[in-house]
Amino acid sequence: MSLKEKIENNIAVFFLGTIITGFLAGIGTYEAILEIAELEVVHENSVIKKDDSSIIINRFIEDLTNDDYKVKDDAKYAISKIGEPAIPLLIKALEEGNSELKKEAALLLGEFKAKSASKSLSNALDDNDQYVRGAAVTALGDIGDRNYIRQLCTALKDKEPLVRKRAAMALGKMKAKEAKDELLIALNDKDTDVISSAARAVGEIRISEAEEKLLDLMDHPNSSIKENSAYALGMIKAVSSVDKLIRALDDKDNRVRAEAADALGEIGDIDAIEPLEKATTDSDYWVRSKAKWSLRKIKGR
Image: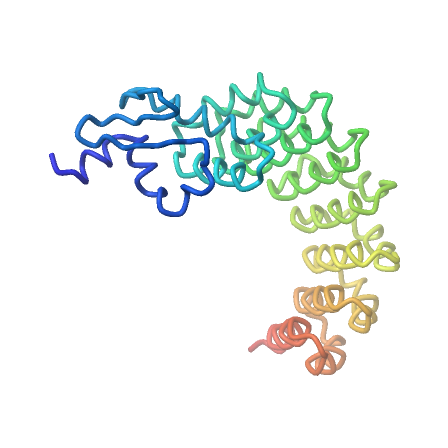
């Protein structure tokens, strides 16, 4: 067997070999010496055999709570490169770790789209720490397991805005039509970030029943709410919103102007042609780009 094959056939050796150049500064406490001939890794004076890669993974998991952000970031990178073998150990960390470890484990499980972690993530929605609950919500949205849509709907009623906001985002990402009623209620939330995320979600899901509320939100002083309401009105092709979207082309916030221009193209009303032509000279590149795209779409070329 070639040296390359020996390395690639061992997860711990292959992992360390592929990232060692850019990673040594970050692992600090990890005195890693590769014994290629014996396929062993010496780690903090412990000899790790090729069948004991879980020991290395657990060391990286432990560093997810390290106070040194460089070490922490490198541990995340390491686990992301290890991939599937890390999932069972991350689930254990989610179930048994401290709040910081639970949060980091949840987010990594979401990145892995680890469906096997869905139940544990659902359980974490009852955690006392809002950041753990928020991370669990985000992870469930990333995984997209539709068996847990109801639990995410419940998270829309969480006492903390951070969790409600992330629940709206997750449901939108999952295109969860089952969450229609809860998202319509969330458009009336007392927190602006939650309203904004809910508006985005109803657009992603195309909930036409939100049209009247979205029209009202186009007059909201918060730019993020106006931006995402414009997006949603475009997605549901709300002809009744054309006048407000045209007015939004003069909004002081370039993101609102850009989203309004895009929405007008989605709706396709010819009354928007002249205002969009004016928007092609906007000071912002994205507004000009969106306006040109919408004009081509409306004019059919």
